[in-house]
Image 1 (cartoon, helix red, strand yellow):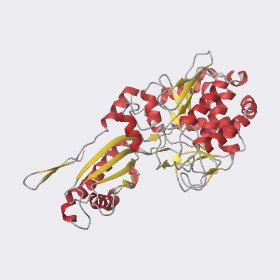
Image 2 (cartoon, helix red, strand yellow):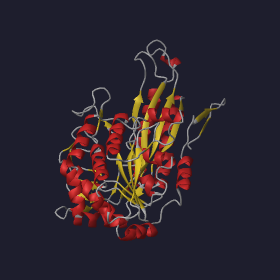
Image 3 (cartoon, one colour):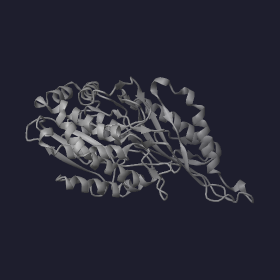
Image 4 (cartoon, helix red, strand yellow):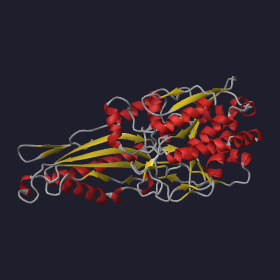
Length: 446
């Protein structure tokens, strides 16, 4: 482990400079042009040949040890969030890295630089795939729908999109360390998944003062739908960890006109695909009820978001053991909890063993206006050491540990193709109400 410590320390300034640049140049998902270019240039300066996504940001490279063995994927995320209240938010876009991804990318660069040291590679076998991946934060659904319509992407998240493109073919195990305000290095049991929704209420515009009776108020229909969602929350069972949190992205065009179009974005989060789909039926029924009450129509577009996941128990053991060897002064915490946030690391967990643990070093509320990387030592330098230590435990001794973990793992889906086919089956859309001449209506919930 001393070789890892020496190599990472040698590349300390490289990592800290990367954190500084990426923090100051935040970009949201599938827009990370500057960030990806910066990372590409840094990797190429280290001598790496890259496979670039091209029409979207992101890339990967493969380090081949020259010795047969498993392939391990290590990831870093490129995108930021939007939090206009944050003091460091981009004044034009509101983008800011109040998610820790800037530290992830900086640590990934340090890992790449350290793997150029022969002493770090010496005990390893197999291959190491290093990937800068876009679009983990599931935001700006309208923009991602535009990319879908153009055929540029198929999936909202960067990891399922890279999975579809074959960028993870041949990988046996994956991991990525996220930066956290928690005080210790840690791992939970996993996290919930989500379904992404875009809802359009369709009414009829009319003069709001002169002849409102000639209109059909889409905003009133939408507020009834939102109230209906709030009224069914007590039907969600705690064990399913259901979260529904809609926002109105368009509520009308002019105060003196009855709103004819109102749009809503939301997630349905849940502990399992089954729980998400059951909750989604209830939510769609509530949303349709709002439209039906006003005589409006409603287009509900449901698209797969991210899969629920469980950190592989054997990989949690690897993470704890690696920390004790590389950073014995640090504490490792097993939270024993399933988080109620979502990440597209869950999509990888559907087909391979993985872990998504956390390193300390941030302060404030995740995704909030007071989030910062306060301790770069832990968030970046120690994170890089920890990840290289995990990699070493997996790929030393002919990759025995990695082989055993893969052999014991029981994925939810047998292959990438089976999983992506299931994702595609979750997509649905179109108007949900057909009004009949006799005054009745037919409603399609799914």
